[in-house]
Length: 395
Ligand SMILES: Cc1ncc(COP(=O)(O)O)c(C=O)c1O
Image (cartoon, rainbow, N blue to C red; front, side, top):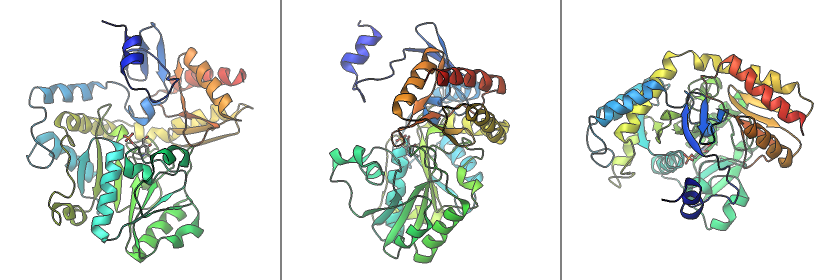
């Protein structure tokens, strides 16, 4: 058998010519352990996935229990499966009215695809508006409503009838008109470098959608499951979307996503045409078991309530450094703005060599990215920030 290195380089499709290349042995809580014997503080959570830490014991227990019961048994939506139904109830109980119905999928991009189809089906209109610099995923629909032109141009033609507005610009809201099916926004723009909207803006978007009969879809794929200091970020802005898309931190490390809406809206997917949206693996029972345990842990622990304070502690550490131009964050979702990508990459490399994993952004090349697990302790925050500060000293 070939070495892990050769298997990866020779037979596994690459996404870049210079992958990070960390050889993973195991992971636990905040830490990833490499085959090189080193321990790394995972300050990026696999990009906002392991919000409750790697391999949380409750998630492992729920997965094991489900393994002893059944794996996949039927395409999504036909059979009654306990962990699916329990997760649907628990999730919708923790969403505001009227978001009482959830459709399970396998990933963030799929949640966006489902949401895009839903707004078209409910309104009978086709136009979808999204924001410049947005990121909603890499399938053709999600890519069509993403704002990064460099990443899109090689794959055109994308889906028609998509328009763009400037995020957090009230002047653009008149573009939402009676031809608009839906407006899709990240509640906090992630890949654009953690750009926060004002509550006034999000409320005005919702009001304009209501005025013209369009639906507001909020993409909480990165911001959801406690990342920003509330279960979903929109809860901090006094607005309730018509559709919410989620994934990433939803499965405690397992692949699951969903879009949620009011039951009368979701019922539109059952007729004209029947089976208006289908998936084989969506709502896989093992992933739903993990998702349920993940949600129960989040609701039981104080981590969501502590995210804001922990975030402020990281910001206070990093803001002190003269190389840092700006720290943008909500809870534990961070962009640390430096001079340029060269500095970001050198800081990333320094941190990796010294046992701290950070990352960068696709659409904000001068910012260093952090999204630590919510379970991180203040001592761990201080230790990770000491490494980052030492890395900043070398720039
Ligand atoms: C805001 C947002 N939407 C959608 C996606 C796509 O999710 P996935 O990679 O699971 O398809 C991502 C992934 O980074 C995201 O950050």
